[in-house]
Image 1 (cartoon, rainbow, N blue to C red):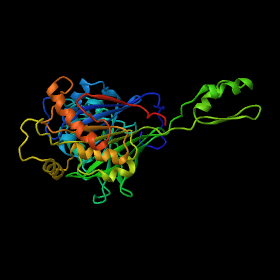
Image 2 (image 1 turned 30 degrees about the vertical axis):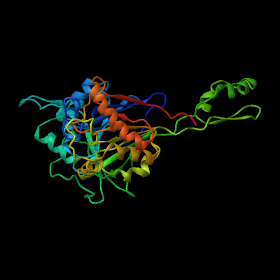
Image 3 (image 1 turned 180 degrees about the horizontal axis):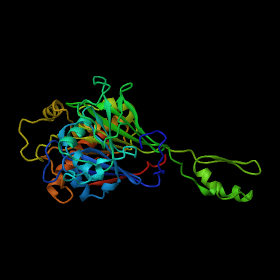
Image 4 (image 1 turned 90 degrees about the horizontal axis):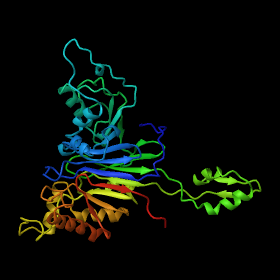
Length: 394
């Protein structure tokens, strides 16, 4: 569903769920896999980044492989994309074909059926096409790659001389940046996705998922006396719940509750400065921000004596990354209701739910961000699952 007219059932009656499939930076560890997270939106699942072994992590999680319909890539560093081809093959019944003379239905894919959608920066389409071509992988369903092109990128073409595969839909878009952002790269009647560049060591993207306004909370006692007095069918409550007005037989007009804002989720890739996201990230219900490096003398073993907060932040930024304090500052700047830190150096353990020493380290990292943000902060671990509800009514 990449058309603005595409329709999906409302999802406001259920939480939006985020499952962290991998929370490591650069190198995986025994407790952290490469970067990937899944967002469950009603019955559908969207992935953001797809590092090595993501397919394996999905199998360990509560995420259903058959429900994945989109993947959004923040940048093409290997720790964020090396798992994409195995995942694609797993979701679309990929295989290496058959022996000579044996018919394989995957040779005749119907590219007119809705494709599995992949979004990413320049090079994503070439990477997928090359990997499928040279591994002789055939898919039983179509896929499509939409590229978010930076102003310095070529605005047309596929960025590869390889022919489009049978399974690749010809509807892949090259989406230009307008006024510094990519607005509504995906949109249906319930959800939209916009994106903006963020500063890293290579072209990198942050994404915002926004739910459309949802019905306000209704108080039946406010309406039922008038409905009963005028012998109006109780079915009008459905109209009122949707925020509409109803005129009763005696001329009384009942007005449904004002719709409230839907939920907003901001997911950043690797970055030392996500400020271009500000126009599309304000008032997020949840911000997921990397915190690759932290200064924790006396807490993290082997901390160098000459390390300081300034030197750790300088090194992180030189490599295109952030500290917890930087993440906390950005969360505060955009008015995020909650903040989860992600993408940790291999020196920070991911088993803080079972190891007391690991918990001390990760609590300390969260506290560094919280001191700037002004609210409690969560540190992600692999297979952690978080529900996003609505903010309390003010």
